[in-house]
Length: 125
Image (cartoon, rainbow, N blue to C red; front, side, top):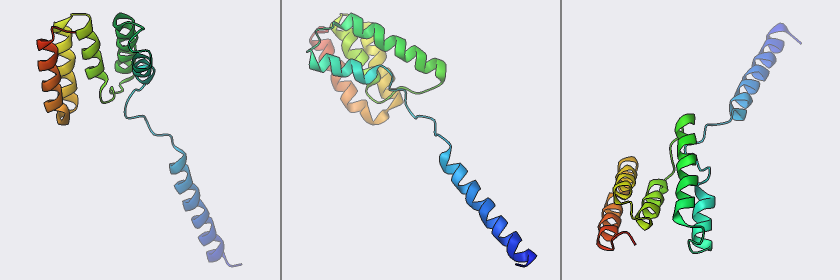
């Protein structure tokens, strides 16, 4: 084998390894799903038996952890919190979380406006 052939094969091997190394690098998650899916599942499965207060505590703790890690909350997170706050009669926090959902996901604005209007007319229940 000539030196050119050996160098060519070495360069090809190095390029292949570099390409494969790029594929192995784990990507950072876009959203922090921790705590959200189990809470929504428990709420829907048990028809809210766990109580909104318990769920609020769990979701707020998970939200704080996501903020500390610099991870965004997933779609629906603030809306679900708003619904739970509405059930406890905390209208100020209900509006705050509906507004946060609208800000983070502008495509949800129409639906969030509807939910705000509905929660206000039902008196939070």
